[in-house]
Length: 452
Image 1: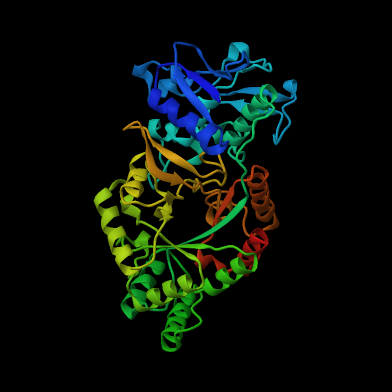
Image 2: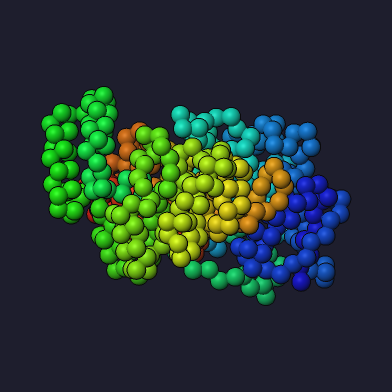
């Protein structure tokens, strides 16, 4: 059995990240011991050992969780080609979030990257806790992240670090076997607006028309919407946002289940409130369950820092789908606050959250395409919850106010490249597409291509 020797500082954090990388991700057997030292040491008891830089967890207590503990920009680049680290590595130069810059030249027995500290930094969302930068929805923006500022948001850098570690370990211990993994395509749909017209009253249509006029929408379009509402409410069919059968059919053709995250609260206009116990919503949910797909929870806009509201909505949601086990879901508008929001999911016995993708840019917000157990930076312990990082969302890539690629071949190529990188590491490609966007046949074709 391998022995991992760590310094005494930040013991809970060190134990957590060693368990995630060596235990959760690689599936290795090991034991931990603590001794005063300036690096992480992995040894076999027979004189063979690997040393790894140890920087983040050497931070002085008064600087922990402050801006003084953040890495210096721009990051140093680690050139792994010097030691022929070519197994499953996508680029020669790897950005070093934390590392020993005085010993940046690697060897077979020393890695100058603080692999454990850098991975903890990304998985725990350390930088989000420290940073005060927020967008208009009080979200930590991609543009403020270390990954975006240093050009590696499109790379699962924790996976790259893990491969560097694995190659070095295999050289010292050729008999090591890692846990097998299988690529997963996880298609998800946040049901913000289940129907454009079905189940909506005349007063709601009138209110929405007033909002549309206020925002300068074309009056003829507003009239068309009114006549379409009248047609849909009379026939109970042909609602343009009711694309659920089509989505399930696409998923079933490629042999996967898809997840539909429903809301059960929220009274702000941005929540697009619908009654979770309403006839049409219940009919839709039961159809999804009968076809073997997943129902998830989608807490409303204001729940991000309101545990009481979160719990109340979840109880209402659970009561509306009694008898069906809800495993996870995603926060509305990707609003998230580390680690408080995670606590709400854990405290209510959910298995996973899948909020962590940036709204303004697709990519690897957590630095990984692997699902992983999350860590509470304030209470300093692992939570009984797993994060399933969101890699790509429709609006992030297509809309003008974000990446602005439009429903084009450029968007398709970008999505397929993200998917390829997840497959490369036998990880999870978690995709979010909203049902109401499939009114555009171009987006239907993009989704069909990416899922296929």
